[in-house]
Image (cartoon, rainbow, N blue to C red; front, side, top):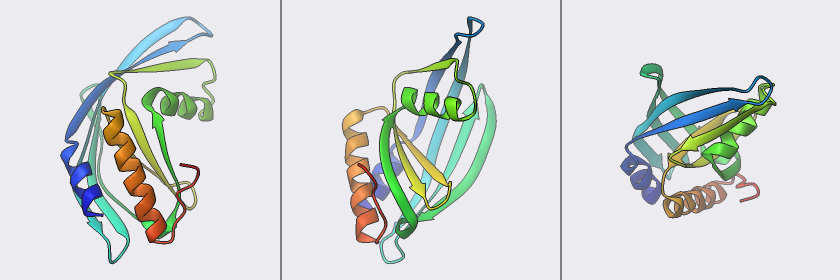
Length: 150
């Protein structure tokens, strides 16, 4: 848990551009994202992970919130690319003709809780993303949750 806390706190502010293309009308557009996780606290005795996050899109803050989850309630721990995550989310929202490309590429650790709650952690370095995902999966198992297919 201390390893996860340190690793997530060290990520700092991350920025990327997501380029979109809609094959239905051949349009293109981009969004500039900044994501920052801070104040990560991993409590092994309570099996909880809490943190603060800020999301900015095109210079406008769209979220500034605290989040937490109990590792016992985790149903799945997944590592994917930013492209895969965004394209999957777009299809789920009904945008089947959209295609997204994240630049620079990033790796997304997605923690899914019972129900529909999802918690995201982003990494530019694939090795760091893999280590964080394995550590999260191990912590979830120790707390009685399910690490899913990873």
